[in-house]
Image (cartoon, rainbow, N blue to C red; front, side):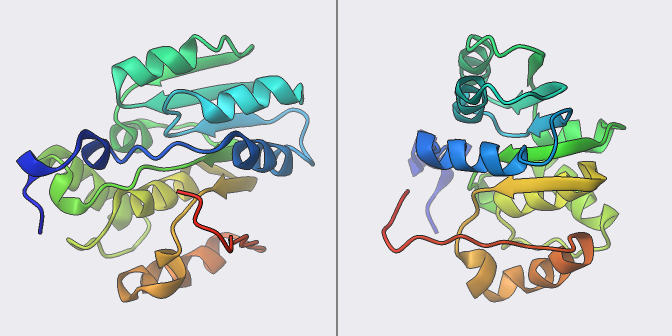
Length: 198
């Protein structure tokens, strides 16, 4: 186990940014059947998905972006995507406090190990899991919390387009998530890559 003080800043914040072509593909897929969607980007970083949405010129109702790192939130806001706002907040807190449902949720959630979470983040992540009737363990990575939380924030006919690691399909601690997702969605498409992208 790596000590927190020796971990890189990238590992601590879980920031692995999405290539433009992948963000563009997810945006086009997510909005293909909805021209009046309310959109959530729960981990917008410097705004890769917002940039793709701006370049696409696809119509949507409004977008809310959430980003924990203030500097990255400022970069995302500076894209000046119409009908959008970027909130500098911890996603777990945003998720637990939100009463709103979104038609489309897109993004690349952070990859942060449990031990790199603050105590508050650990507690709020556990609450998100409990809210969906799932068990939270010390093996749970932040990306899984984002997936579960965003399922709670999705409207009944909504679409979720995420970049997630292959461990979703492979490791034992993702087993309950593999059972959970088919209960939430009537269709799940998985696109994998032959070459390493991140």
